[in-house]
Amino acid sequence: MENMSSVSDLLQLEGLPVPASFLTPAFLALFFSHLFIVTANVGVIALICSDSALHQPMYILLCQLSLNDVLGNTALVPRLLYDLPRPPRRRLISLGGCVVQAFITHMFGTNNHTILMIMAFDRYAAICTPLRYSAVMSGRTLMALTVAAWGVGAVLVTGLLGLTLRLSRCRSLLLNAYCDNASLFKLSCENTFINNVYGLTFTVVLLTSSIGSIVVTYSYIAVACATKRSSSLNRKALQTCSTHLLLYLVMFTSGILIIALHRYPSYEPYRKISTILFNIIPPALNPVIYGFQCHEIHQSLRRLLRRCRGQH
Image (cartoon, rainbow, N blue to C red; front, side, top):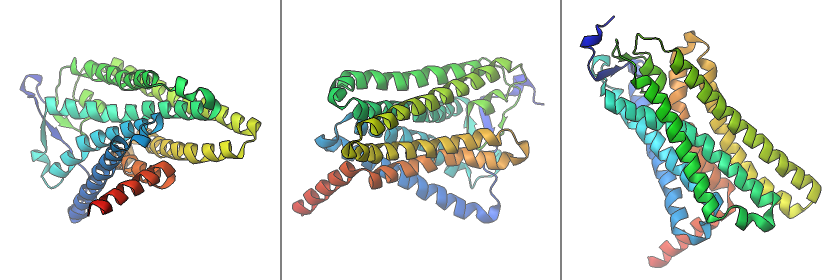
């Protein structure tokens, strides 16, 4: 055990468990996935911002989801690329840099849930109360929901890391490929019972709220489609809701896999890889799913391409 007085603010990351023969393929896979995620999501943001036809709540929320994906992936992958070819003793990060990375990665996971919860409410308002949709999802309501989604995440994650930073450290090696709250509080030799309780409560409340909102809103949508017997309503519900549900299922499945692997210490290397995939697979699939499924995105992209051809 390291002496507490000798533990500096410079921390060492354990890194990814990648054999030397797979370093180059792993580096290239991470690099090109990051390039695709940033390009595709920034493209979605630019398309929505530039086309007034897409200045609707659903697409503004999609824009927020893309922004969250870019922030989460950028906080994680470039650092992994930097550390991957380096020997373990040189995978060093400052305490401040580690806390910032942990904050952004936890915000990324939390915002995924909160933004998709608002998107579910938006789909409920559009399908179940179409005549009052503009009033229900007004600009003021959307702004309030957005501030709540990002604000609640920021407060909860700040509390999570605040409890960790109050602890003194007796180690400097983080047993992970990147910085997160659990890896940080495990650097302490003090009692971390409060940290574990808060972290578990945080996870349970977030997952319960997320699953509950999806179940409730889609139950109302299903009842509305069944009772109104409108083919146009059912078609609209199928088009917009299937896209949202697919995004949610991809994100939820990736997150549940990480939680499940926590219960099996022998699968620790797979858990580390799965946490990284959580920051890669949903951000990579989100713009692709919306790009293929959403008619309005198709139309906007065609208009943009026609304008580009006209200029040349």
